[in-house]
Length: 140
Image (cartoon, rainbow, N blue to C red; front, side, top):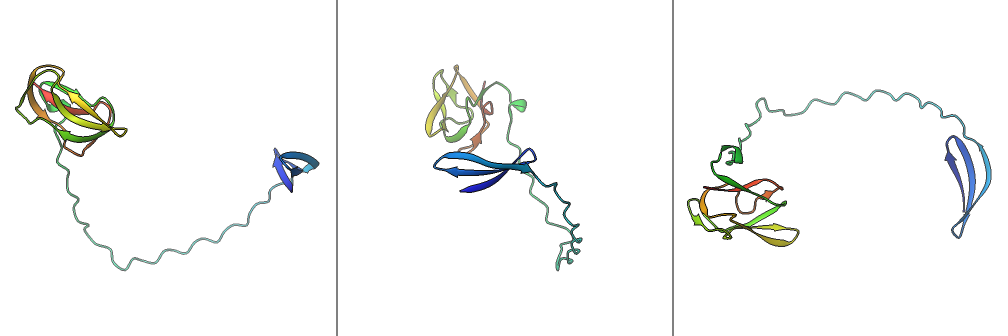
């Protein structure tokens, strides 16, 4: 097969056969020519219906965050999805108790209480996607 390859303004006629390339000739590439100016596009037709006042978008309710919660905040050690929450607000927990299950990379990871305490707030919900460092649960 023969090809013409342009490298740095030079044309090379190359023959390729069974994985081996041979240069047959070289020449200067012709200077690029300016393309003719395109005609301006016609203005779009006016829309048949445009609502005067679009409906208001619902404002999402803000979940509690680490900034407005008292107590020690347990954070996500890795990105993943909350499969289940094993505690409830106000529940007393012991060090090592499972607080929630975080699925990451097709594995279920148990997030455990780092110390004895009481669950002050649950900052995520089942099915939520979290990133590394996101607040999960606050302990008093």
